[in-house]
Image 1 (cartoon, one colour):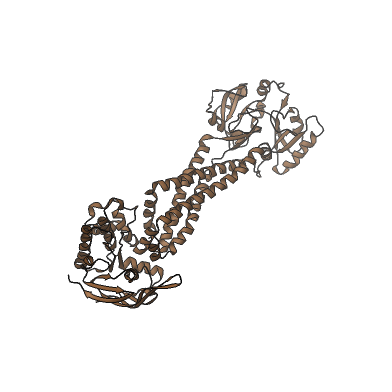
Image 2: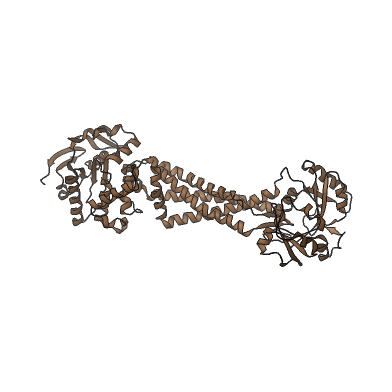
Length: 384
Length: 229
């Protein structure tokens, strides 16, 4: 019997287009905001939450927080590799077009030609172009797929940023946000271009692999201890912790935005509840007529709750799909101090957004539904 | 054969500190197939009695039996199911659902019945045909005249083939021509289909269509007379 009333509810929604449209529009906007904030949170979580497999340390200049000011002698790499537990230490030069938080920062990472594989996170693939060409061309660049998509760059293009012009030799696919959003170039090329003394000069940081994830902290302490009394003391941390520290401002902004997300959910609840309460007020007579025809209070209550759920699913679906689609097509990355945090386009966001909108729609309809189901018919007719 | 029996039927409302007693120990019997007009001044208990017969209100005391069912003993949900099976109700102000067209309004009570869409369609079409409004089936209430709206309301009331058709001043909001058409329709339903009809009216012309007139006053049956027609 309940199923047979569903078309009736849908007619009530579609045949009040202004009220339904305004409610659905409001829900869509609120859910768009919520889902975009969730996408940012998801990206921050992915970039900063440590996992048991993490085995990469970043060695940075102590008390420096920007690639322009972190300068470490390249020969530190040889000393780091002698520390027990270290598998490799690759010097990396980083240049960015903007040191502050931005959605489209170009980050160049200069790495020694023979050590590229040691820097890349496991699971990487060449989507287009050739790694051999990257090795043989001094100005060759290996571009992360997200950056390539964002900037519309393809293999064979010449590409300039921060005064550096490179030739796109290959496009890199990777599961790691850091690799998807940077441009790898040869270290000597980047050093020459930046006029910092060529090979054997200064680098921004070292990317250090350890042989056992369990000894990460121990190795980090050993590295910092090694250079404690040097001219350029270091600060070593896991890659996730480094991202968390480097992108602290972004994380704080995203943390604040989380409140906006919660506010958006409250807005969804208020919009649906308001729409339903107003509709119930308008339909006192209609509901009394339905009861006179034999509809039970429970059945009318179901219709009210179902209406809330439909408004939630339509508005939530539009807003969530829009947020997810923009995040997916836009390939946005929040970059700060040369570290990248991608705005996630995880399909689970779709499920979460729509499920929350439906749940709030149902919740908003429960109290009006209960009240409607308890109304006395004769009393309803007397009050209208 | 008696369809409706009221024994000392009483309804009391609490109006602030004052007790309002629109029905006061009413005794009444109505036979199956009768067309009954309830008449009387305002406050005489006509509409209260009609609401009790429709199962949309409950007696305070006394006993109401319709088609061998004691109405006061039914639970809320049982009463709803009983209404769906036994009662068709025609309101003075039609009370069609404004967002539904004529066809959909008539279809409403059939949504509660376990029947196929095709069967529903046949029943709705037949009811619209009976009230002579089949050509307006796709019109919304705002696109219909008062008389047409009342015909749709009657179609909605008879589509389930109820035991009892109740009408609360069905011509009260209509012009003379529309009122005559509606009353002829009700009379035809009574005569051709044998429907039992109980109608509240103030209008003696309208009451003439009934074959039994019941005059109420202060919640009691004052007079019972056979109609001249």
